[in-house]
Amino acid sequence: MSDWTGKRLRVYLTEGKVVTEEIPQDELQRYLGGLGLGAYVLFNEVKPGVDPLGPENVFIITTGLFNGTCLPCSGRWSITSKSPQTGGYGDGSIGGDFGAELKYAGIDQVVIYGKSPKPVYLWIRNDTIELRDASHLWGKDTWETHDDIVDELGDHEIKTTIIGPGGENLVRTAVIVTGLARTAGRGGLGAVLGSKNVKAVAVRGKGAIEIADPEGFDQVRRLFYQKLQESHHAIEYRKKGTLSITRGSSDGFLVTRNGQTGYFDGWKNFTASTFNEEFGTKKEGCFSCAISCGTHYVVKDGPYACTGKSPEFGAIAKYMSAIGNDDLAAALYALTLCNKLGIDAISAGAIIGFAMEAWEKGLITANETDGVDLTWGNVDAAIEMTRKMAYRDGFGDILAEGSRGAAKQIKGSEDYLLEAKGLEWISTFPGVGHERGRLLALATSTRGADHLKGYMGELVGTQLAFDAIGGEERAAELYDPSNHQGRGTLLALQNRMRAATDSLGMCWFSAELQMLGDLGPDELARGISVVTGMEVDRDRFMYLGERAHNLQKAFNIRDGIGRSEDAVPKKFLVKNADTEGVPGIDPDKFNEMLDEYYDSSGWDRDGIPTLSKLVELELDFVAEQIITK
Image (cartoon, rainbow, N blue to C red):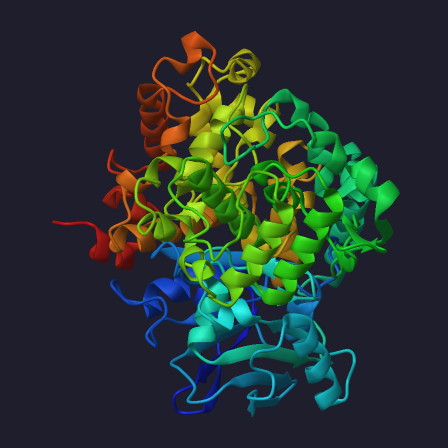
């Protein structure tokens, strides 16, 4: 029997006190950490109907189970809260060093309640925990704030997670920032901290991680490292990061001019090779990373001179193809600006693209935009509007509500929205092959149009896919865009795997290798066993992931977010799309995929987990709240 333990901080801002408690072992065994434990606490602590920006909402930081253990690529940790942008389940997975440092301080989870009467930051130094005045930090960007906290506390090894002006001004696309460039909290979770008057969390720990089976752990660690070193896919990420995705962007899958087309003539300007040749300097990885996909960049001179690191394909594309700009230096400048201001670059660029289409259609003019010319390709206007969003200045105040919120104030613009559940669409266009599966994944993701929940593309052509849908021949059919069967089944499988992996704190650049057979559920289950002493096999690993995913879904269902919100943007719904060879999906075919996904998940046709499924997952307390007798 495992004697695995964990510690939780409950931070009561209104009262100005912090309580430390042991996490019940049953919770750890059932939810592991990261996403799973965060979802469990959110479901229990936040009641339906709560205002995401009110004091009744909570903000949760949860370390991944593997954080601090030095298992390769195990540096990711989670934040969880009710989303100000979608009104439903919100979370984020983030890398860097913060999660490991929090574990070394002896903390597995931090739950923040209420609202401080003045700006504060939470300082954790091993057993010393205090709320410190942050009035002098309020209004500063994330980079300035980090430097000031480090100088104030006198230790340059301190790790921080910070909100910028976007979070302070309750921008619904605000994120948290750690390590100056790593962000999390799409859906406005940075605004939740802002609503609570919390500027930052700083941590310094000098403890150690106890491993149940040190000898077995060393074997697993060596196995993980070997597989990651030998994997062709890991090597590609190491060399090129996510900009490697741009290699195929001439095939019509780049969201261009707010999704008017999937083809962008300037795609070669933001390939990995272009970036590395012109702006890349040195590589960087998260804590215990065996891939190091991040790259520092420098734009040396000109109007877009800047420095930064870890540019991601999705964010760069939003300031290039999505707005019709082909200047990579300008896009990097915009990304650095978003990181400093603490707003989500994917959503910010997407919202500006939406506004540019509204401008093109004559729905807004310079009279509404404070004189800013939102013509396609005007990257300087995009940069200016990014600033205006973060500070809720003029027209930026409208865009700070997110594209769905902005559409309510821009008459006639609803048909130009690219979002699901209120969260802006990512940078890929639903073109051919298994991209149809991406449509389904984005539409049904529990936190909105997000690619980090359950995209099933990596499964196509793998043994896992063959086993799930009935053989290699059927899996090959998924490359046929006119075929829609099997995609729902694979997405349900992928959701379980992703939820379990995010509970461990494993990076998805390594976890994608699960789908490719390099590093799979068997190996990760073994990792759980040697770290905790709790016996876990592949089936138990998948079961734990399914439980965590159902908690996310149940949170949304309880707040009225059901089948009608598992939807594709109108732009991508095209009657007879397959027979006419048009990108997009036929509405009837989409509903067939959605039905299959619900069936494969053990949910009814309204997308509500059935009583039998919840009982199977030992979520009886959830059934009592979402199932009408």
